[in-house]
Length: 51
Image (cartoon, rainbow, N blue to C red):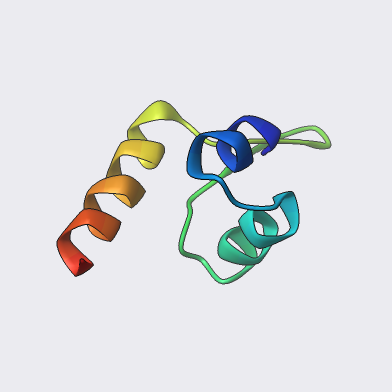
């Protein structure tokens, strides 16, 4: 999440809100939360279309 926050210039809390809201699809591996590169690309494409 920290890498996405830096990449998108958002707070980590905002990234968590996007995840909790279902805007970003994640994968859980134990306690770790991961976002695949494909899901990052999908989210970025969706945001680019809404601009």
